[in-house]
Amino acid sequence: EISASLTKSGWKALRYTQYNPSAFQFLQAGDTFRLFHSEQERYVSSDEMNSVVLRPSSSNHQVIGSNDLWRLAFASNEGGIACWGAQFRIQHVASGRYLAAGETKDAKKTMLLLQDSPSRTCTFKMFSTVPSWNAASIPRHATVQIKHSLSGQYLQCEKSDVSPEQEIPLALFHDLDKGNAFTLRQADPGEVS
Image (tube, rainbow, N blue to C red; front, side, top):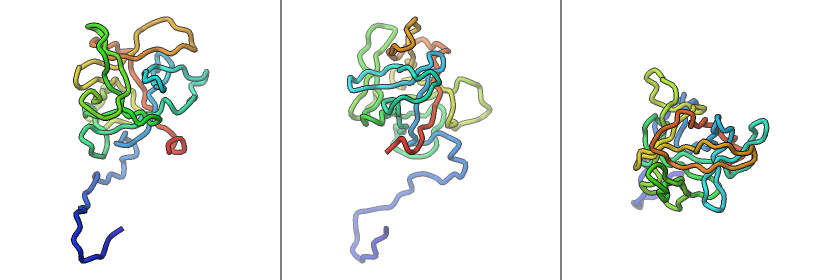
């Protein structure tokens, strides 16, 4: 909408992002997705208790609920295509809160929590699990390792023998376990309001 008034206003139009016709192939600011841990066959999820866990999926890996929906937001508050190594925030769609580093339990791990407002403890970077040839942009269905920008720790679960119905807590660890990678699974537009 454009105002044809002769009165000057304080509003200014700025371009949010560059148009790119092939952008639909890549993860972008504002995209809603699920993080699927292939090795544990579970989705990253959260609930009202502020805990971040790997929640079991159904037997055929179908989605169970909306508590495992996450949205990408750049730390710079800009739009556009997500690139490997760029700083971003992961917002929990159901609560509107941000994934963040919480209390440090010991020298090896830091617990995760959801935080109301974005801060430096909410910034992460994604890294590819497979070598790519000069690809700067993150594909929509990439398998990634997630690193906390401030602490340098990686998002992981502890290896444990748990029943298929049991949730597994997630934390940030200094030593990267290559098996702790997450597949980005785009949410259907109808699931997100």
